[in-house]
Image (cartoon, rainbow over all chains, first blue to last red; front, side):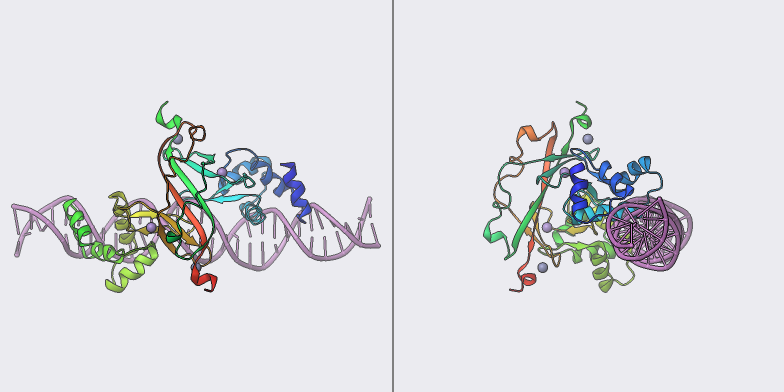
Length: 138
Length: 138
DNA sequence: ATACTACGATGGACGAAGTCCAAGTCAATA
DNA sequence: TATTGACTTGGACTTCGTCCATCGTAGTAT
Ligand SMILES: [Mn+2]
Ligand SMILES: [Mn+2]
Ligand SMILES: [Zn+2]
Ligand SMILES: [Zn+2]
């Protein structure tokens, strides 16, 4: 995490209180916050931060490859700091909780040539759906 | 397609000109239109149709399992009439074209128990990304 | 330490996508 | 052909996100 701030400084980022707070809020495992979640938590630490700055900072982190945008539903995008180890997502259909998962196998290789329509493939996103233990009443 | 209208009538649907037109517009292979696309094409056939009716009808078709909602990006949802044979999607990163694809293997089975976090799995969506032949300049 | 300045922050207007509602219309039935 | 409840309509509203003119400040130079 302070690694993150160091990387950003190296890339010429001006280290402002706002950017620091957004980076702090995004720290952790299985973190998939909406921009408004980030704004809310950032505001708790730095009351005068603005919505525009949260969006700006998130957008920059995405461009730098430090954060991944996840769109598991038609609602607000989620921002995922776990950008350095590729993974997929498991989403609870009831409460929306999202977990990071790593399926076995190579899904890219599983797309036969006859099903590629001449595309040059670059990646694949998988969204597993299910019901989490809490929502199943276990 | 007229199968569709028959199924809908059987399920107690009132067969209006608007619903007929929406169903017609959604006919075909590799069809993934936004609600506004549907509205535009429906308006060409039935000028007085309203946006609300397009959304209402699409929503009903989704509930009935006749159409699938596809959210491949953070933009407008796409509506896919190919609901009866399960498939995944291949999306061009440049132009946004979407093709239906059927990867080999069973991606659900590829999620190890240790990666399921106690969830009861119900399905998985895969979005392959790449560049289509047209956009690659071939 | 102080001044400078370009980069970043701000808030509010704007836009895109989608939902909701009260009032009017019409498909199906008798 | 009369009836009626389901369907349609336009517009207001909500949510999510972008844009922009202006202000503030982090980093640098002196
Ligand atoms: Mn994740
Ligand atoms: Mn499809
Ligand atoms: Zn849950
Ligand atoms: Zn393309």
